[in-house]
Image (cartoon, rainbow, N blue to C red; front, side):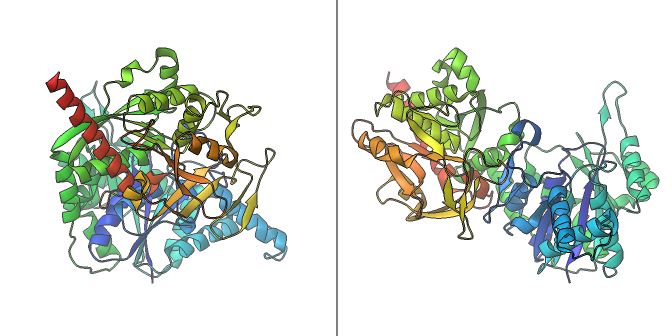
Length: 553
């Protein structure tokens, strides 16, 4: 029988519920328990397909094609269980499911209500995602007091009532702000947050108190008395310079012991040596490199969270401190590319819309002409294709139909037909709904022997996708004749998955690769990722070559 740990949050959002929940899951997994995680998203969207990065940050994608909350990325980074569609659902999906049942007559014509129909459906979804595991950590999005999250909180309360004794634990994460003008940590927001939770019948078993510093014993005692939570269950979670220190922080304060005792579990002691080694590697690099990430949402680093972590993982696995500078691609358009000269490598991530695209194209051109290691992801690959088409293949008007629907040289265009992961043919056109019409999920492709991609991946690549536009097959032969290397195609539609520049000949480049998929989704701190590891190795080699050249000058 699966046991449940519900993680809620209060006061403000973005306190790190996902990381805290994932860290606890990592500790429980290290104790030999089979653990999974589920994220309940309070927004009404059926899927995040049309969500703006400015509002939502990053959307994570699973192997089976679910567009999910960023927190699922943290889950995969911290535990070995892979996430799927059953590990994340929104209010919109719940209501959609209930309404479908109502139209089919499954409720026998009864009035459909939040209680019991919506809350029962939420519980059904939770049980579906938790099946087969010892412990399921269920993170409830939003903050206590939000109208959106109330049905989820109510469903969790009902589940705890219906479940067997000692089968549920509630953990509440709150903010303990430091007021500089008073020189004090303030416990009142936490007290009020717990009060709101208790008003709806949920009594937390442990509190995770976020602050910019460790919370003193007297403040923890005060929180304990006001919140009716044992003092040893008031856990201090202070700001850390890496998220991979959090498991040890929570374990040292006995959070996993509290959870196991409440759930009547008696697993072996925790073994957090893997996290100790990771943190040591992060803090004791042998060398350093500087890379430039040229993107559209650089002021919103949450939009690139998985990417940043993947680069850090590569740093761990190469013994390298990676300094990342973020540069808005619109700055390239206004100021030129000269200030790219100081970097050891360049990365152009994904994005959508016309804004800043020409800056990304200019960045790809700079990297190609100056032999700087270049990694283009999703749109980063597409702009590299456009740049090569314009300046090497003689297609001076080359563009994507995303940016210029009337271009006469659409080297990148909207894909209209593709096969999804379940083998079904999906179709769309310019008038199709945008939501849920991306090429999503994992796809396996053969890799061309003798290419840079083959050196990185071997014979086969399986990566996750999230995009609408593709390299146009009608132009690929023209680009290949001009010297472009297409190193992987999808087996059915022959869509371009990986492109690179040759390492010999007139367009030779030491390390230039673009991928249509999102490799950052599969990088973990324990294993890293071969593409990012190779990218950082190329940056190291470039830095060493530049230093040698400078010394010999």
